[in-house]
Length: 123
Image 1 (cartoon, helix red, strand yellow):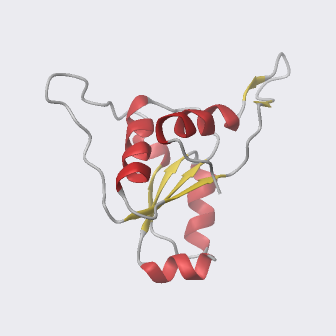
Image 2: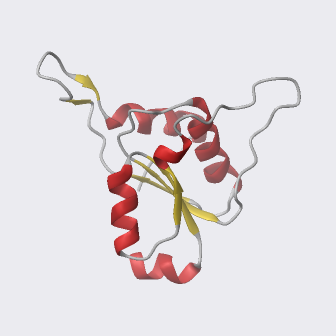
Image 3: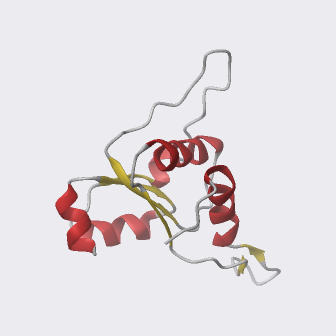
């Protein structure tokens, strides 16, 4: 499957952290997003909109401590506007253990946000 995707020449948008990008680098998949978008703000003002890359063929959603509205909007645009764009989740965990003091919202939280704005189920 990875080789087939690579042969399409499509890019991957990542909601997540550096580990996802490192894995994509290992198999030669062109990707962007992740931590580089952690401080990017969505232009929420009259006439404001987010432009997206029509060559994105997949959105991968992994655990992201820096989730923001720009990332959610970018992902939903790719999934809703790019024909055949795949929605891939690294996991659907309800909670995760970031500290020893309590459970924290897991990747299922991020996946649920994308599911909610696209109506899609992840692969």
